[in-house]
Image 1 (spheres, helix red, strand yellow):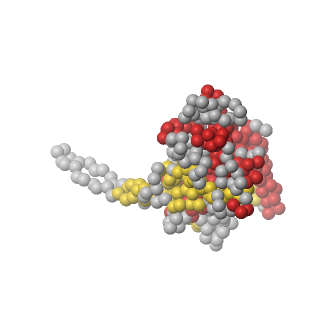
Image 2: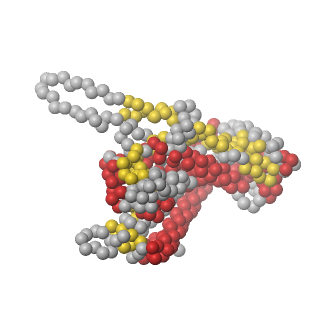
Image 3: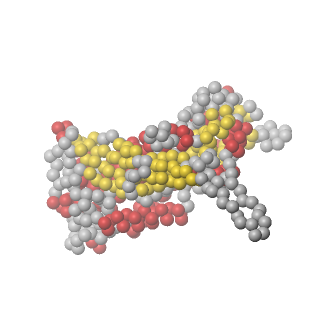
Length: 464
């Protein structure tokens, strides 16, 4: 089915679910049918997301074939399965083979051939080095659909892709044939790492991401001038000064480890799957899981999570399993209108389940009502709550007594700081007796909410 057909089916299911919502919510005898319908809606939303993601990947691959090939350092042809690379350029296949040569160079009883070493050298990789530095993009902004199937505009995709390609080209020019960096070679691993970091958890889909070249303290100035106002002055009267007070948010760089992944010599040498991409995705997901947890609920002795840094809306629900329409309206209006313009909800999936059962009576005598949750029925249009899109973040607490299971506000005021290079380490000797090689990724990150006292994000608390 096409994306449009899936969205049409989603609309039909939403109408079916609506029939089960009465004045007092969903009756117990209808709850299973209601939940089954929404389970189907969730599956369709996921299918839309996957189809949109595939479209984005195919577009990226098409663009990469036209833009990402760089000339080789030498003019003579190099190994490419017995064929010359077109126009003497390094191809995506060359990069993959060079990266595989680096991976297998540490396997017991494995010797890289002169042709493999030559190819790796031309691609900027030293197979004898145990460290591979992967430089990620200048700004990791969402290039894949979010949990609601919402994807960026074509102009956004083009701009981010061009910016990333230009930076990689600049970095490539800095590499010599004997470097250990591998900036030109690690495209597959780099893409897999970035997609894994972006897709997992939700925080990177809503936050502002800063990429820095070094890991020193990063001060970000803040000021709250909202209480200050101008005055009327008479003719020939000098204006007086009203000084602004500044503060700062300082982001550090906490070092994260993926923990190592073991790979057998046979897997590295004989596997028919893309081992480079598999490795990058596995390492990326591990780091994505822990950083998303910390970006959400971190204590400050690690990244300060958005839930930790958010302000109370002073709204508490009647019980842990009840979130009312009035509760959500009160949370919305507890946030200053300046931050509601780009407002967005974030919640655990269990909270969304409760919200989907809320039905609003539109006028006196209305006996059917309208669900508060509104499905997005057009390509690129998200599902909404009170007209605002939302992000599911499973690192938030599920509904339960006293938990903060719903956030609202300008979520992009949360700043994620990435230190640019990710280091992939090859551990040769540790498991040599078992015929295995271990790989480990190390990266540095921090995060905090940019709040000068104006409270851009607030939370709702579940009742007892």
